[in-house]
Amino acid sequence: MRYAPPGLCVNDFALLRDDDGTYAVLHLQGPWTSEFDHLRMETSYGRATSADLVHWRPEGTAFGNGLPGRFDQQAVWTMHPVRHGAGSAMFYTGVSGLTPGGWPLQSVGLAYSDRTDGTGWRRHGTAPVVEADARWYLTGERMGWRDPFVVRDDESEGWVMVVSAQDASLPVEVSGCVALATSDDLEHWTVHPPLVSPGDVDELECPVLERLDDGSWLLLGSIGATRGFEAWTAPRLRGPWTRRGPLGPAGSYAPRVIAAPDGSRVVLHTTPRRVGLTGEGEHCRGMLAQPKLLVAPPNKAPRLEWWPGLDAWLGEAADRPALHAVGDIDVLGRTEVALRTDDDGPALAVGCEGVNLWVTGPGGGRLGETVLSRTAASLRILTIGEYVEVYADGEFALTTLCYSGRPAPWAAVSDGGTHAVPTRPVRLPDPHRDDASAVWPGPPPR
Image (cartoon, rainbow, N blue to C red; front, side, top):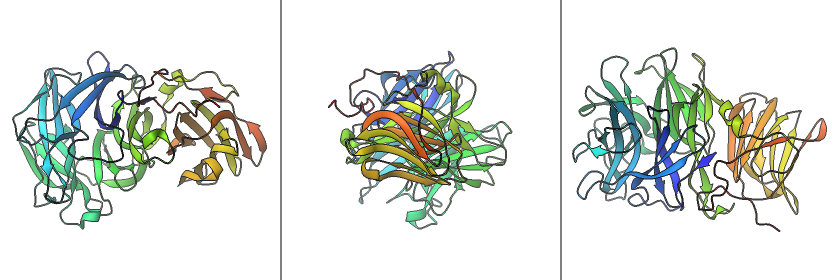
């Protein structure tokens, strides 16, 4: 249900599916710390494999920094592999060093592999294949040229790349944009003006392009300031693009889209945690979360829903306490559901009234809240260790962290009175892991 390699955390990632159906994830990896060092934190890609996008098996490191003097000598950041002939081509972010002001110097490189499982990479030369063009993008302090994502062009036989960049025509605080480049052969690229430049975003990271069933396009982009991600749609790849608003709530980041084993289209994303695994710890990079179902109606805003593929990991409904559990509740007026307790009362609760949805910790302090687009009639709550997710009328709406309280039978208080909420326990893929990447096991026994 949550994955990080032993002793490390996960940041941006990419998904592949091998010819035998096995999934692989390539991901940035680094130590558990809130102090991010641009040149030493993320210098390699971890790799893990899965048959179902839920149970991941660590497979070690698959790629790392380039040799001294090369464009990727200091760090390698977000990547995107694509099928190429009988093997793969991977575009990735290389960091050569820092500007005088301490900003990472970024460009995009290329590696090839004869395989389709995310291993066996060899670099294409010693220089990047595409760099920021100063006519449209910042190239020095506060520059951005990272997180490449490549798809087939829908107007030619070539390729289109989108990149996280900074629009040189805007104030730097709101210059986050999605850059555009095109190529006929994957090795020679022409940079164009931004594909999307909202004008109110500081960083628009980890762009994803997905062609939908009707031939239209979906663009996902992570918003630095909110730590969530938004969606845009367009009839053609070059637009016009319509902004559809948030798709993932704050705390979900760096999404990727892939076909699940059941054929449905799902989104996976990262989710943070806190240093020291306490509520007082600083937020840091975290783990890969479980899939969500992507629903993309024609000419409407997409949404994320509960993916039925997770039901195989749920036990029978009961009223017993469980640290990892799923429960469904009808909302009757103001409704609050207590999930954990401590000596002073509820230590974790979810509440909803009309369009207002919230999660509280010990003493009733707000851990997270949001305003829904419409009044909710039902909630689905998922807890996995410290992680809490709330679905409103089936739609992924809120996520937060809670390192407090002891599991208790869930109880709902609403206009209809107080009643028990049956829960289905969640079976963890690796329940006995005891390294730094294991989910929070709950408070120590009293």
